[in-house]
Amino acid sequence: MNRRDVTRLVAALLLSAPAALAETTDVTEIAITYIVDHPAIDAAQQGMLDALAEGGYADGEKLALTVQSAQGSMPTQLQIAKEFAGREPDLLVGISTPSAQALQSVAGDRTVLFSAVTDPVAAKLVETLETPGANITGTTDKQPFEPTLELIRTLLPEATTLGVIYNAGEANSVAQVEALGDAVGAFGFELVEATAAQTAMVPDAALSLAGRVDAILIPTDSTIVSAIESVVNVGTKAKIPVIASDTDSVERGALAALGFDYYKLGWLTGEIALRILEGEDPGAIPVGALDTQDLYLNASSAEAMGVTLSDELLTTATKVIQ
Figure 1 (cartoon, rainbow, N blue to C red):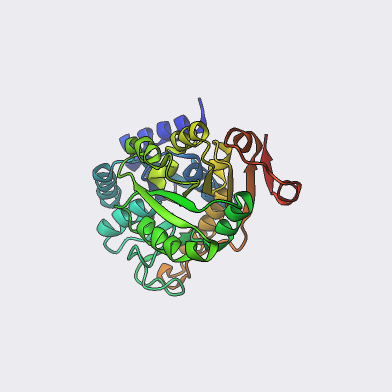
Figure 2 (figure 1 turned 90 degrees about the vertical axis):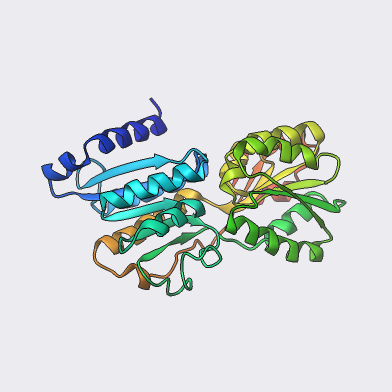
């Protein structure tokens, strides 16, 4: 049984008898939800749980944990949020923008902690990053596009068109694509957009870019990242390099990414959770962010997509997948 199966089993057991668990000992109840399953979200969740455990809140001991995925469905996400809020746990946690928004909409005066939200201000989760306000705070995975565009230019000196696939119904994704559109001109790219409202639509969105772009960039969009393999498949067949914004996607076949380690981001989220559980006002805790980016390269994907990786890039990479 893998970790995801164990997590789901724990969630099912807790849903069937959360009160009984709470009565057996003095436990802190935390409810976690996320919009869709994929490795970056898994890594963020594990990092948070490990930080909590190191801080004295180990699952099954001082911590009663409930975890549910919305499986890519926003109606399901809203239903989970309402169910969680009705149980009044000590902390509501949303990993991804849609999950955080759903929890915030029903939380009332309960505390919400978010992780892996790209633009918490644009998503109307917080007033400012420095002073979130109300009863919410968390961590952001927002990062500037300029270093990634410079990387793409280094990888593809002759490229002129850059495709981007995103969920136009997700506020953070729209904000990212607007920022990307403002940035590409300085690097000599024309941006070509393709949208996918659901995971099942991602393959068609990727196919729509074949023959139209020299490379594809995937932003930190949960809908698209959850189906990154389908984009990689199109990129491999059409010889279109696929660049990601999260390092986990390189493990899954993307050619390269200059991005964050989501386990580290989750750990930072866990540290903020500990501060909240120890009595700090969440609205006064600044939104956390990592201050370094890691370069991941996939050598086999580079060969399959027709890209030669220079010795300089290979030596400076944090990790090279063969």
